[in-house]
Image 1 (cartoon, rainbow, N blue to C red):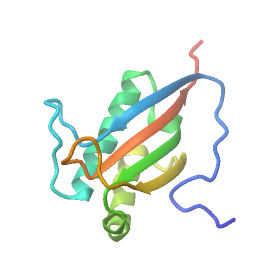
Image 2: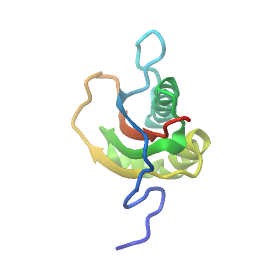
Image 3: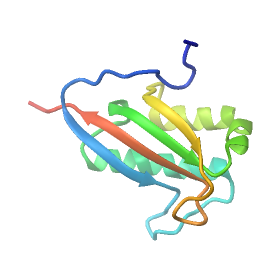
Length: 125
């Protein structure tokens, strides 16, 4: 098995509450998908992942699984370095088990990328 770069092959989660994050795209508070490029949308969508997780009492380091859906894997590959920098800015150097999948379209016709994540938030006390 090749050494993982920017993801984990497997994650063993500590005991805690499972948090399932619904698909997060580059929606602003008004529900409109913003950003003309994959890079812009990636940054906004990932920020939405972090906000949703924080609303559930968690932090990025609690992510155990992340599926990234995109309508253009070639564009994702071309921007991989920049996307990696944005990822580390939002999540740090914590890498859950991840998969990147190309799809024909996402529910919001303007969306270029969508994250679906699972986290395990430790019980407090």
